[in-house]
Length: 324
Image (tube, rainbow, N blue to C red):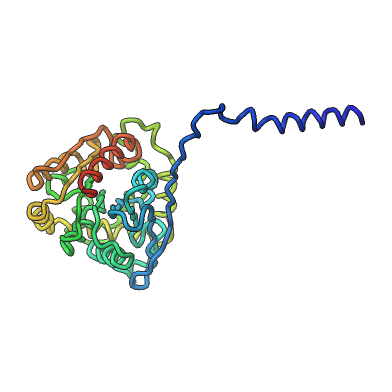
């Protein structure tokens, strides 16, 4: 018993002394506070459809609207959002059929780019985003540019990452079977696109052409594929792939918007992307000669392995153009 009491006493001394040992030296400045942005995960109902979106930053800050690509969701912006949220109101929605938003049956909901843009327009209006810089990637480009055509006065800037608005950007062999389906909507041509929503292609989109594949978290394709494999979601994706052709006739209008409105523009493009290759990046300079362009050694989802390069470029661009 005496020995146990001695051990207990020593333990008490050790526990009591530990905080003192860890305390800062007398006179030393306190450690710098760590600012951790709070991200909210919200839903809004638009025409009976629940639309999920991530939101962070001051409610009165300049708005940055992040529009995702295929086959992902606002999940693709999870690492960028905290790097902007100290100063900017960052909003990253999931389109219907993607991420955490509702995915109505494709026979009950029109999975078209016109309708997706309409839903996004109603969403940002509902949540009070009256003016915004658009970050557009992949599908986000035609959706964002359709918003710009509807409300050109709302667009305070453009950040373009592997998002096309020119014929030169649609010459990749990736698009060949999709273009066949645009011309002939037969079931045979639709079925030929089934492989585009498989795990192999989803993984390929994240890993092909990346400067450092070890930076790419497997959570990306596991997360996206789980959502693609939901009952009925393949038809959602095939409808969207089939409707992508509706954007091409609008390219001249998108380009006219660039020329007439001349929004401040930053282009950050993964040059090894086989879906939207580098050839789609440079034509922007015809209509936006003052655009800042950075061609990166990366692939389709450049944020996954070049965030350390892209985030400072994006932050600097926004600070110079949105907070004057």
